[in-house]
Image 1: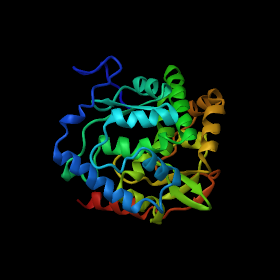
Image 2: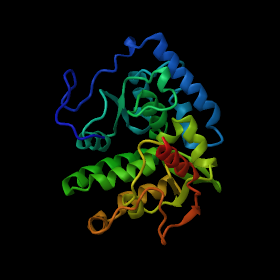
Image 3: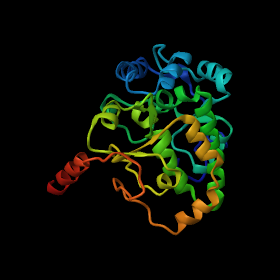
Image 4: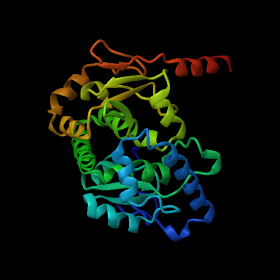
Length: 290
């Protein structure tokens, strides 16, 4: 999401562009395969089973960058979603409008070898490998549409920042309880080798039971691993809480309250794991000495 004025040259009014799959180079396809192999090998015991089911159903194990035309044929028949290419970040309301109409926007470029472990702007690997498998899950697909519809309402009320926090802590960096164990489902985690390990295994971050209003008050990191992760009980519960909540009173309370700082815990939190914050503290100490 971004706050930009008008689509760049070559983009349609809704900011979409052709994928131009035939223009990808052998090196770009090889980068996808390298990233895919690394994540697919380490995720099965860590990620929610629905994610692996989505990989299998969408045949994302086929070598090379996926062709959106082929991908959309399978995805559309499963849940009615489509993936559309965009030149980069799009305005908030454009983003919400696409989600509300079951279109997921994806960058068409792929990272370079120098960006193997970190890239600031989402690339096609993050967007397609990270997000699309769960769009094949009917309940999560409904959540994403409901989020888009909620985003359009939030834009009219001046509450986009609160909805951005919800997206960050669920769609991008969410954890889920599965058969008594914590599993990954957020795209920002499952597309990152390092954070796939950190989010579940490291003692540093907090792991907190999901609460809609708490999440919408919570600052987040965009430049490093998260200091807190929120844990949902199921996709059904996430959908119900988001779609059925009366957000008007919540927005009013948010307007009158201060945001919760990154890494902080509150007295009403359901703390599943109280993090040491050792990772973040060590990084902060190194910055001060450099």
